[in-house]
Length: 392
Image (cartoon, rainbow, N blue to C red; front, side, top):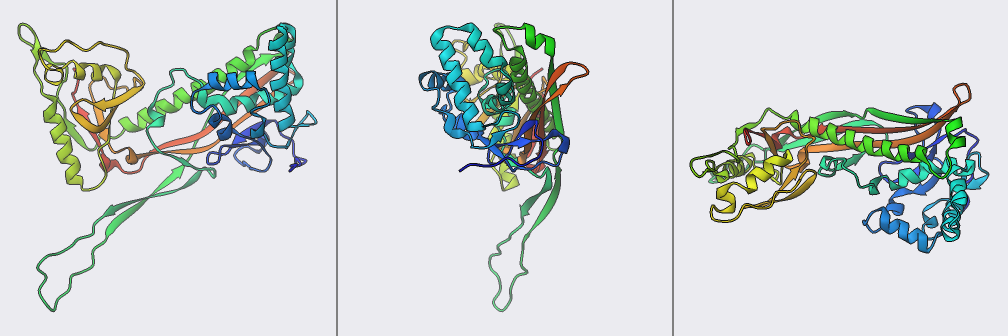
């Protein structure tokens, strides 16, 4: 079915946070975001790689350049006279021809073509999630709530239901219930941009630094969002319990002084007392995990010291504590503390992602802008414990 583009002027794209569908976007509208003219199903594009990253997807395109064109809609792209589906087929086919003919000039022409210039942002939006660079893992821990309207309320309930025993005949108990609270959510704007001069575009041949920088901008955005999650987690300090220094050692030869089991049992008791939720995560800097697994009581004093590796931005179950995942991310600023929590305690409210291009004839520049709307919010602070002094 052909989708006719409206008469509105567009210069970019917006991705719906819930469906993953990319739509045409006019940056002049600001926060008045409309989802009218779909051009691409970004989730389907990524799903076709079967979760194995861009290398698998690239291999698929090389073998069949048109194999991914079914994720594009039959909507006209402004300034091209062509639909998104047609452009997808053209750019994939042209790239394949350039590879087949070993023609770098043809490859460069594909990259710098004016027709494909409007298309580049679209591809970047669809591939962002497959980029493999160090951007942190914290955003992947918590549930994302699609917030296309950028504001709303989140309800949190505390169960207070009671059941009584040995109630005398002829009497009845007062009904019990619980309490609830509403948190107002307002999703702020985060933005970055890269630019290139017209002359640079003209003289550079065989390379595409502009597209590369735009992709790097997406990576920087993910890194900043990860830092926002770390900051929100570390703001939870009202519930605190004393930890033990996993790496504390003394004596000759030095041996570990602290038994981590004391801390784990304390936390288990604390979460039992809450009566709801589930302690399923522990978050800290990465080196603290290495100090834990080399603790003599954890590894066994007669066993060899485990190999030390960079465990930053990784996760695993905790030895001696099944059911709880230890997430390590050096975006956490504290070098002495950790956080025990139920991951339901924090939510990420995700608004639309927009990308658009602005050309300025006066300054002879083309600028790509990436704008994301995202808010991290603690919705149930009673499920988060700050654990102090687990490292010196």
